[in-house]
Structure formats: C-alpha cells, structure tokens
Amino acid sequence: MTPRAGMLIAAGALVAGTVTVLPAAPADAGEPTPRPLPPLAWTDCASKAYPELQCATLEVPLDHDDPAGRTVTLALTRIQHTAETFQGPLLVNPGGPGGSGRGMAGYVAASLPPKVAAEYDVIGFDPRGVGESEPALDCKPGHFAPVRPDSVPSGAASERTAVERAQSFAEACGKKYADVLPYIDTVSTARDMDLIRRALDAEKINYLGYSYGTYLGAVYARLHPDRVRRMALDSVVNPHGVWYEDNIAQDYAFDTRHKDFMAWVAEHDAAYGLGTDPAAVEAAWYRMRDALRAAPAGGKVGPGELEDTFLPGGYYDGYWPRLAKAFSAYVNDADAVPLTEAYERYGEADPAADNGYSVYTSVQCRDAAWPRDWSVWRKDSWDVHAKAPFSTWNNAWYNAPCAFWPVESLTPPEVANDQVPPVLILQATDDAATPYEGGVALHRLMRGSSLVVEEGGGNHGVSLGGNDCLDEHLATYLADGKVPRAEGDSEVDAVCAALPAPTPEPSAPPAGKKAAARTLPAPATSVDAVPAGDTLHGFLGHVR
Image (cartoon, rainbow, N blue to C red):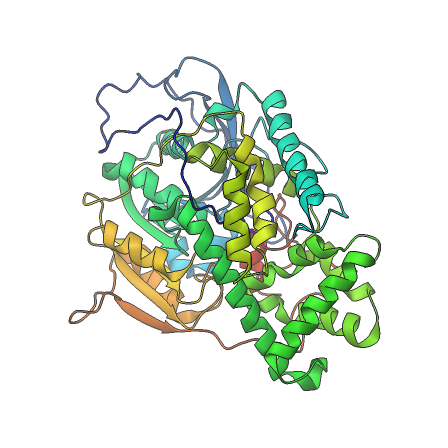
C-alpha cells in the first residue's frame, strides 16, 4: 500500500454479489495437472549498485484453473547464493498491490548480513500485470495529471464530476483488459508464486513481504503451508479488514501521523519558522491547502496534489525535513518552487505509477466486494472526514473505481493457519498504512508466529531500514529459523526501540532530484550512499 498505489478508503458496508469462495483449508487434491515448466534462463542485468543481479522470465497460466490455456509472463530477478550452505530461494515482495519487486532482490541481498545473504538465492519478481511482466496494465494513462478537482467535494456538481471520473477509469479498464481483469487478484498471484517455486526447482520457499506483501504471503501460506520454510512479514495488513475495516483504520491513522509531522515541525520552529504550537502549524498547512485551490503552485499543485505530496511523510519520517522546507517556503516566503519540486519528487504520477494504480485497482476491486451504491461512499467519507480530514476524500477517489468495477468480486480467503513453521511478524506501533492492530491480528491467526514490535515507530516498512534491533531479529530468523518468544503472558515476543526522529538538516538528495525508480536498473548510487530508510522506501514505492 503506497501513497499513489495503495491508499484505501473508509467504506462501512459490504454488498453481496457473485463471488468465488476458496476452500476453507488448503488442498492440492483435484487441482488441474500443472504444465511442465522449462528451466529459467537467467541472464545478466547488473547495475552499478547490484553487479551480481540476474534476470529471467516465467510464463504462467492466466487462469490457473486452465493450465493449458493462455499465459502471462512474469519478470524475475535473482542474486544467487555463494555459500556452500544453501537455504533455498528467498522471495521478496514490496507490497502495493501494484508494486514492482524486481529491484528488491538486490537491495535485500545487500542489506542482510553477508553470511546470511550468501546462503540464499534472493528472488525479486514483478507480479502479474506489474512493471516488466506482460501484459503490464495501464488502464488510463494520465489519470492523475494535474490539476485535479479538489478532493473534498464543494457541492453536488463537484462530487458528480469526480464520480464520473472514477467511473470512466473503471470503464477504461474493462474495455482495455476485459479478458485479463478476472485473473488479477491476490489468490492468482499467490498461485504464481508457487509456480516460481517450481521453476526454481525448490520444495519450499522462504519469503519476505512488506505491506500488502504480508497479505500475499499469508494467502500463499494458507494455500500451500507445506511449501513454506520461513516467512517474515513486515508491516502487516489486518486480514480481518480486507478491505473495508482496514480502510477506516488507515484514514484515521494517516491523520494522526500527519499531526505527528505537524508537531515535529513545531518542535523545530527555529528551522522552519512556522510556530511552536502544533495546532497552529496544522492550521497553516490547511490554509496553504485552501490557497492552492485558488492558485495551484507552479500551475500543477492544487489541494489534491498537495495531499499526494505529503502522504509519503505518513509512510516514512525521513521525508519530513524536505517536506517541511517546502511548507515553510510557501507559507513564510511565498515561494512555491520548493513545493512544486516536492510534488515532482513525492506525488507526481509517472508511467510506473499509472501501471501501479491500474494493478492496485484491479486487485483490490476483484479481491473483495465494494459498495456499489455511491451514497454509502458519500456517507462513510463525510463521517470519517469530520474526524480525520487529512486524506479521507483523497482515498475515496483513489478507490472509487471499485464502485463501478466491471468484474464481480471474490470473497477474501481465510488466512488462519496452524500448519506453517514459525512466522516472524515485524510491526511498528504507530504505522499509519498498516496500523498496529493488523500485526496483532495476524499473530493470533498464525499459530506459533512471533511478533516483534518497534515501540513508538511510525514508519511503514521497518526491517532493513536502519533499525539494528529489528534487522538482527530478521537475520537470526533467516540464518537458523529461531524466533524470539515472550515471557509470561505478553502477546509481544520482542520489543525494539524506534529510530530517533529526523533532524531538520536534509540527509538525502535535494528536492527536485528523483529518488530510486521502481524499474531496473537499480539506483546507480551505492546502497550505503544514502540512509537505508530512504533506499528502502524508494523500493517500497513511497517516492518516485
């Protein structure tokens, strides 16, 4: 779940429809006979940062229930093991849905302790429909071109315009990909993962998933518990809320995290000159939003684009210094240039974002039922907006195509599991995108799992991002399968302190310089040239 590829809207009602229900428990009996898989042909696709990176493609059935039918192509990457001890493939996924995972292989291999990384083939992949996989979906290029109407409706006419815009996106997807959309969903992607396992000639997989990738991993584990060796899930989707209750929790959590940012700006008044009262700083931010409605910064940053720009700050506080500088320049100096540059860096949609959004909507709208009555969306959005105004309506329009989606929805599978080896769950207490309750919920559903908590942490995606305590737990688990266990009645098995808040001095490339792209080759800079959190969140899709 990323700012422009995974924001969810509060929707408080379910609607019935024609649904496909998975078996309540995994069973391979009766599955179609799988087609033979040719060996993967790995070729060099090295970058300066990851000189050992290799690439391959794999054809998989579009419809897994028709293995002899049409195929789609998945794009894979690999950093091959170098140690005599080989622990098998480690599949990695950065979330989304719609996030490209090809670049993650190099980053994960470089970020783990060398001895641990050397024992794994680290495998990245673009899920079906994403990035270099074929076909790569792009329902309506330029859907997020600025300046969009204000996300908060000013009346019936503006709301109707936005509804029609969402409906046109859904219709464009249906016309362009009518034969593909029924098969863009989490279960199909999980079944693709098992074909990757087969193509790698592995009896079992190891897996590291972030954000939506935690849900994908849980679904895979439910389908194939006997094929899971080790599984680490970082920043966990609440499986009880796929996708509605999660949406409500996320809207409130992002508003809280935005207030945390405003308090940080107030704490550093000497640097930003916006006052020492967090409420007054927040009021200044909303005045800026109002001003941009009348005069968009640089002709392209209106209220909706402003929200897009500041949403990444809810995912990762490493962006706060640059966002605060842009905020300060606009309010104190009437200088819109830093704000425009911040939008270009954090919020502007490029072709990769168009692809990610197309897959996001395809998966989310297909995975679970959404209200088809717009009045439900209107009531829910206004109710939540009254308490959490920062991004509720922005989220509503992001997800609104699901109200008109041309493919009927499935029923989310049950992910409770008592058959897998111990699963390592890593979760920050103040994560906005996947609130803390999700990690606890999955911990309870996966018997024998271990919950490691970053106390006071607000970032989304916490392992391999610079917290040595969390990274040590992950490395130990991948090295020998050991997980921490709670003493007494505690539900939390281990606690790590959060990283310190950022300082006003920027510690990354200046505004206007694009960060890590989602496509290969990986960033030309060394992974040590910028903070680990910056690099990680570039791969997770929180900046463009």
